Image (cartoon, rainbow, N blue to C red; front, side, top):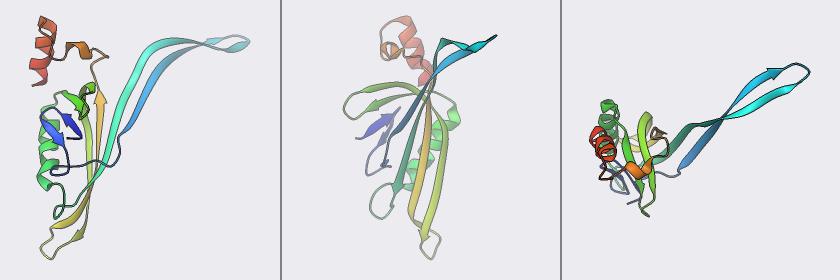
Amino acid sequence: MMLALGMFVFSLPTAAYQQLQRQTQWRHAASSRIGAAPARQFAGRGDDVITLPGVILPELAGSTLSLDALRLMANTGKAWPMVEGSGRIYGLWVIESLNETKTIFLRDGTPRRIEFTLTLERIDDDQIDLIGAGTRAGVHIIRSVL
């Protein structure tokens, strides 16, 4: 297992990603000042986005059904807990987009190569301690995710 997003497991038999790209932003509000550069004030964390580009080779590794499963998850609009194979908890993420490119076709139109890019956005405000917690808040979050 490389990574789990909810109940979907990224691996060679499903969909293996080639890279995990993460971009985290922090917000700094600017206030104009006369005769000086704008003053900046830290306003908190901004967007946290993970991009997973990968390749599915249906004859060797991966399944075309994996992308269908990810689309079904995205259609729910729910947030999903993300856990790395090493056990690292990333928090709660929503699926923002899924792009796929099919190439090298067989006679019947079946692709031999499918490149995909999955974009996820974090929504839990660093409250990963609530995942699986026995508190009412933790149970509420887990129930709303599932």
